[in-house]
Image (cartoon, rainbow, N blue to C red; front, side):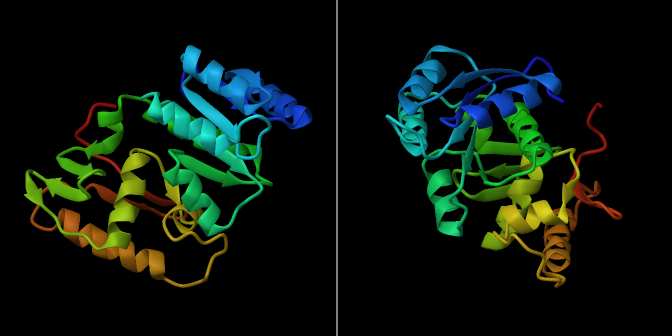
Length: 232
C-alpha cells in the first residue's frame, strides 16, 4: 500500500463512482470524484493527485481527450483508464493518448486496487518515468535501449516489453496472468511455455557476464526483478 494516497475518479456512472470511492476508502485511499470530462480536467489540473482513474466514455469531454490535454499541459499524473472497450486496438489507443494502464470493464476491484497502487509508486517526473533502474540495469523507454554497467544489451521487441513491465513493477511479484495481459495482450492463458521461453532468453541476456542475478522465478507465483544489494 502506498501511504497517504489521494486519487481522482472521473466517472459519469454515479453508482459505480460511489462504489469505487467506498472501496478505496476501505483500502485507506482518499478519493475525489468528477462526473464529467470537463470537471475532471479542471480538478486534475488544479489539484495534486497521486493517480487518476478515468472512464473512457464521459459527457462533455471524453476520457482520452482529458488525458491528452493533461499531457499537453505537462501534467504527468499517472492515469489508469477504465473502459468497456477492451479490444487490443482500444487499449493501444488509450495508452498512446497518454494513459499509463488500461483496465477493461468488468473488472475485479482487487486488480484495480493493485494497479492503482503500482501507479502510485511510479509517480514522479517525466524523466523518471522514462527511465527504469534496478541496480546497475537501466532501461530507457524513450531511446528503447537497455544497458547494464554501461554496456548496451540488444533485446528483441517482445523481450524489451517484458523487461519494461518487470522493471516497472520492480520488487513486486509479477504473475503469469499479468504478463499475458500486459506484454502479450492475451486475456486467456494459451497454455504454452511462451512466457518461460522469453524469460529464459531475457535472463541470459541481462545476467550473462554479470556477477549479480536480478531476475528470479518465484515458484508458484510468477517472476520478480530485484537487486538484493539495494536497501530494504
